[in-house]
Image (cartoon, rainbow, N blue to C red):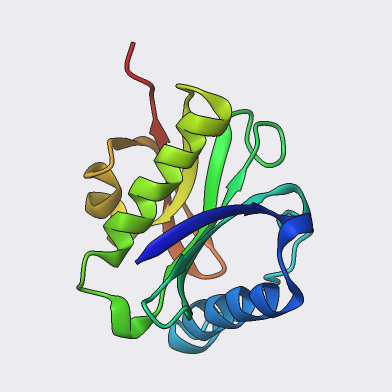
Length: 150
């Protein structure tokens, strides 16, 4: 999978359509979780786009600069198309996110709101639970934090 980073203003209409369609497919349809996806934060975020060899968007996440949602830089709306799961695409996506954060913001703390069943997945990317657990849109979540290496 090939990854690129784009600010909202640089997304084409087709790219924005396709990344929103992927998020709706996974979060709303597959997980049966109606929620307000368009929350205004996309406009302030950097978008990580993962394309397969055919150029189709099959993975995406958004990087939220510090102060947009958390005091720290954040990663959200992490999603991989169903047909790409189990191939390592999720790990590739998170690695790309962390590489882009290092490039754009430096060696900083990163906060995420992870679905609880994915806690071990994020542990593999050096995120640790803050101990804060909660329901978000009816799904158990855990707040996690990446602390930079000195």
